[in-house]
Image 1 (cartoon, helix red, strand yellow):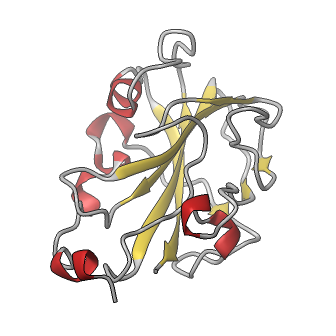
Image 2: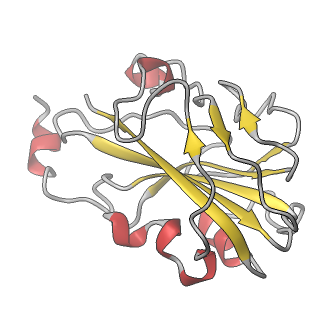
Length: 186
Protein backbone atom coordinates (compact mmCIF):
# COMPACT_ATOMS: atom_id res chain seq x y z
CA UNK A 1 0.00 0.00 0.00
CA UNK A 2 1.28 3.50 -0.83
CA UNK A 3 2.31 5.56 2.17
CA UNK A 4 1.23 8.88 0.62
CA UNK A 5 -2.15 7.42 -0.33
CA UNK A 6 -2.64 6.10 3.18
CA UNK A 7 -1.74 9.46 4.74
CA UNK A 8 -4.18 11.29 2.43
CA UNK A 9 -6.92 8.64 2.63
CA UNK A 10 -9.44 10.96 4.30
CA UNK A 11 -8.72 13.99 2.10
CA UNK A 12 -11.00 14.21 -0.95
CA UNK A 13 -12.39 17.03 -3.10
CA UNK A 14 -15.95 15.75 -2.70
CA UNK A 15 -19.20 15.81 -4.60
CA UNK A 16 -20.09 19.37 -3.53
CA UNK A 17 -17.43 20.77 -5.90
CA UNK A 18 -18.64 18.92 -9.03
CA UNK A 19 -19.69 20.87 -12.12
CA UNK A 20 -23.04 19.08 -11.59
CA UNK A 21 -23.58 21.12 -8.40
CA UNK A 22 -23.14 24.54 -10.06
CA UNK A 23 -26.44 26.46 -10.11
CA UNK A 24 -25.77 27.65 -13.67
CA UNK A 25 -25.54 24.01 -14.83
CA UNK A 26 -28.73 22.84 -13.13
CA UNK A 27 -31.40 21.37 -15.39
CA UNK A 28 -33.70 18.42 -15.92
CA UNK A 29 -31.93 15.09 -15.42
CA UNK A 30 -33.39 13.60 -18.58
CA UNK A 31 -30.28 12.40 -20.45
CA UNK A 32 -29.39 8.78 -19.80
CA UNK A 33 -25.60 8.53 -20.06
CA UNK A 34 -24.13 5.02 -20.40
CA UNK A 35 -20.91 3.25 -21.37
CA UNK A 36 -20.38 -0.17 -22.92
CA UNK A 37 -17.11 -0.35 -20.92
CA UNK A 38 -18.61 -0.14 -17.39
CA UNK A 39 -21.91 0.20 -15.56
CA UNK A 40 -22.79 3.18 -13.39
CA UNK A 41 -20.86 2.90 -10.11
CA UNK A 42 -18.70 0.01 -11.39
CA UNK A 43 -14.93 -0.15 -11.94
CA UNK A 44 -13.57 1.18 -15.23
CA UNK A 45 -11.34 -1.09 -17.32
CA UNK A 46 -7.58 -0.59 -17.22
CA UNK A 47 -7.66 0.90 -20.74
CA UNK A 48 -9.22 4.05 -19.25
CA UNK A 49 -6.31 4.47 -16.81
CA UNK A 50 -3.37 6.76 -17.43
CA UNK A 51 -0.29 5.50 -19.26
CA UNK A 52 1.94 6.18 -16.25
CA UNK A 53 -0.02 3.56 -14.27
CA UNK A 54 -0.12 0.98 -17.08
CA UNK A 55 -3.31 2.06 -18.83
CA UNK A 56 -3.91 3.21 -22.39
CA UNK A 57 -5.24 6.72 -21.64
CA UNK A 58 -8.28 5.78 -23.74
CA UNK A 59 -11.51 7.68 -23.12
CA UNK A 60 -14.35 5.18 -22.68
CA UNK A 61 -17.16 4.75 -25.19
CA UNK A 62 -20.19 6.78 -24.16
CA UNK A 63 -23.78 6.91 -25.39
CA UNK A 64 -26.80 8.92 -24.37
CA UNK A 65 -30.42 9.45 -25.23
CA UNK A 66 -30.99 12.13 -27.83
CA UNK A 67 -30.55 15.75 -26.85
CA UNK A 68 -33.81 17.69 -26.52
CA UNK A 69 -35.07 20.06 -29.21
CA UNK A 70 -33.34 23.41 -29.00
CA UNK A 71 -29.96 21.99 -27.94
CA UNK A 72 -27.25 24.23 -29.38
CA UNK A 73 -24.31 22.27 -27.98
CA UNK A 74 -23.41 19.52 -25.53
CA UNK A 75 -20.80 19.96 -22.81
CA UNK A 76 -19.00 16.90 -21.43
CA UNK A 77 -17.12 17.22 -18.14
CA UNK A 78 -15.21 14.32 -16.52
CA UNK A 79 -14.12 14.88 -12.90
CA UNK A 80 -12.37 12.83 -10.21
CA UNK A 81 -14.13 13.79 -6.98
CA UNK A 82 -11.83 11.75 -4.75
CA UNK A 83 -8.56 13.48 -5.59
CA UNK A 84 -6.92 14.85 -2.39
CA UNK A 85 -7.24 18.49 -3.49
CA UNK A 86 -9.66 21.32 -2.81
CA UNK A 87 -11.47 20.82 -6.13
CA UNK A 88 -12.13 17.80 -8.35
CA UNK A 89 -9.50 17.02 -10.98
CA UNK A 90 -10.91 17.52 -14.48
CA UNK A 91 -9.94 14.49 -16.61
CA UNK A 92 -11.76 15.60 -19.72
CA UNK A 93 -13.66 18.57 -21.09
CA UNK A 94 -15.26 18.74 -24.53
CA UNK A 95 -17.89 20.55 -26.56
CA UNK A 96 -20.01 18.29 -28.75
CA UNK A 97 -22.26 19.00 -31.71
CA UNK A 98 -25.94 18.53 -30.76
CA UNK A 99 -26.28 15.80 -33.41
CA UNK A 100 -23.71 13.59 -31.62
CA UNK A 101 -25.36 10.92 -29.45
CA UNK A 102 -22.43 8.59 -28.84
CA UNK A 103 -18.65 8.65 -28.60
CA UNK A 104 -16.47 5.67 -29.49
CA UNK A 105 -13.55 4.69 -27.28
CA UNK A 106 -10.73 7.19 -27.73
CA UNK A 107 -13.02 9.96 -29.04
CA UNK A 108 -11.50 12.50 -26.64
CA UNK A 109 -7.94 12.10 -27.91
CA UNK A 110 -6.55 15.62 -28.36
CA UNK A 111 -4.76 14.83 -31.63
CA UNK A 112 -7.60 12.88 -33.28
CA UNK A 113 -10.95 13.70 -31.68
CA UNK A 114 -14.13 12.15 -33.04
CA UNK A 115 -16.25 14.02 -35.57
CA UNK A 116 -18.35 16.69 -33.85
CA UNK A 117 -16.04 16.83 -30.80
CA UNK A 118 -14.06 19.91 -29.74
CA UNK A 119 -11.61 18.79 -27.05
CA UNK A 120 -10.79 21.48 -24.49
CA UNK A 121 -8.18 21.73 -21.76
CA UNK A 122 -8.66 19.59 -18.63
CA UNK A 123 -6.81 20.35 -15.36
CA UNK A 124 -3.48 19.32 -16.97
CA UNK A 125 -2.56 18.51 -20.55
CA UNK A 126 -4.97 18.28 -23.46
CA UNK A 127 -7.66 15.73 -24.26
CA UNK A 128 -8.67 12.84 -22.03
CA UNK A 129 -6.43 12.23 -19.00
CA UNK A 130 -6.74 8.64 -17.78
CA UNK A 131 -7.44 7.58 -14.22
CA UNK A 132 -4.31 7.50 -12.08
CA UNK A 133 -5.20 7.81 -8.39
CA UNK A 134 -2.52 7.78 -5.74
CA UNK A 135 -1.65 4.22 -4.82
CA UNK A 136 -3.26 3.25 -1.52
CA UNK A 137 -5.71 6.19 -1.51
CA UNK A 138 -8.70 3.91 -2.08
CA UNK A 139 -11.22 3.89 -4.90
CA UNK A 140 -11.69 7.10 -6.86
CA UNK A 141 -15.00 8.06 -8.50
CA UNK A 142 -14.81 9.50 -12.01
CA UNK A 143 -18.01 11.38 -12.80
CA UNK A 144 -18.92 11.80 -16.47
CA UNK A 145 -21.37 14.71 -16.74
CA UNK A 146 -23.17 15.68 -19.94
CA UNK A 147 -25.07 18.95 -20.29
CA UNK A 148 -27.39 19.90 -23.19
CA UNK A 149 -26.95 23.66 -23.58
CA UNK A 150 -29.58 26.00 -25.01
CA UNK A 151 -26.90 28.51 -26.05
CA UNK A 152 -23.48 27.50 -27.41
CA UNK A 153 -20.23 28.20 -25.62
CA UNK A 154 -17.80 30.32 -27.65
CA UNK A 155 -15.44 27.50 -28.67
CA UNK A 156 -12.71 29.87 -29.83
CA UNK A 157 -12.94 31.94 -26.66
CA UNK A 158 -12.43 28.89 -24.42
CA UNK A 159 -10.04 26.86 -26.60
CA UNK A 160 -7.16 27.19 -24.12
CA UNK A 161 -9.10 28.32 -21.04
CA UNK A 162 -8.90 26.50 -17.73
CA UNK A 163 -11.91 24.30 -16.88
CA UNK A 164 -13.34 26.80 -14.37
CA UNK A 165 -13.38 29.54 -17.01
CA UNK A 166 -15.10 27.23 -19.48
CA UNK A 167 -17.81 26.33 -16.97
CA UNK A 168 -18.27 30.00 -16.07
CA UNK A 169 -18.77 30.84 -19.75
CA UNK A 170 -21.95 28.76 -20.02
CA UNK A 171 -24.85 31.10 -20.73
CA UNK A 172 -28.49 30.30 -21.11
CA UNK A 173 -30.45 27.31 -19.98
CA UNK A 174 -29.31 23.74 -19.46
CA UNK A 175 -32.06 21.86 -21.27
CA UNK A 176 -31.12 18.40 -20.00
CA UNK A 177 -28.27 16.65 -18.23
CA UNK A 178 -27.09 13.19 -17.32
CA UNK A 179 -24.24 11.57 -15.44
CA UNK A 180 -22.38 8.30 -15.14
CA UNK A 181 -19.82 7.31 -12.50
CA UNK A 182 -16.96 4.88 -12.96
CA UNK A 183 -14.44 3.91 -10.30
CA UNK A 184 -10.74 3.11 -10.38
CA UNK A 185 -8.32 2.09 -7.62
CA UNK A 186 -4.60 1.34 -7.39
